[in-house]
Image (cartoon, rainbow, N blue to C red; front, side, top):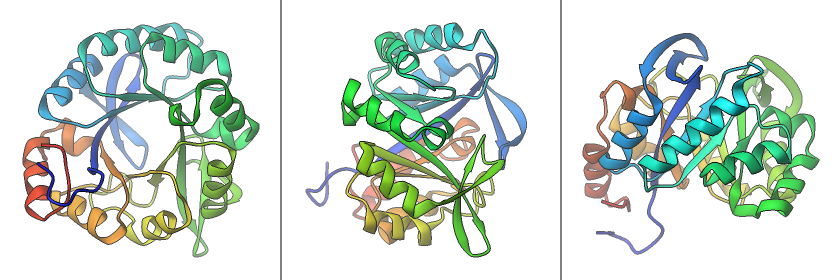
Length: 256
């Protein structure tokens, strides 16, 4: 059921995983438990989510083994594509996760510190497997790339970094507005519209979803490819079947 014949817009729940549990905070702090990631993944898959994103925010020595096990468990439970990110610093990390069943890998701070990593991963696995995640915040009216969960500003302007990531072989951009994240006040449509005009690869909007109308707005105002949210889905404030029905009724193409 597609009203317009173009590519369907994707709805993507995001699960921040810490020590094997899903957590959620506001502006990346005050983390609260939001459930078992494998159960949530299964639930979202059944609800009609188009894809899932898992971000591992655990910074422990044991994390790689743990996250590989999580990926295997998720891959057994769901039949939709999922991306895994967090702490992927080299080809070996990505290789282990893709072999465990992840469909795509997401790199963020590591790519900024070593941009060549994007080229290496695109070459090793193919462009379609490489998502470059970017945390952006407005500083003196400029959108600036931030590292470490949005805590450390860089000298990079967000638009410049997005273009470079695409040139180096990113297959997709996951753009989180730190100013909007967790606020439930809507996506950063101004920035997203700008970004969508300068890149030829899909862009996923992240940060700020609070109502179904925010999804309607981001798709109609910016024409981006996908919208991601966390707590509104985890706590049942927005149900994916309801959201897709609303989008469909607004002539926004979705997979029902």
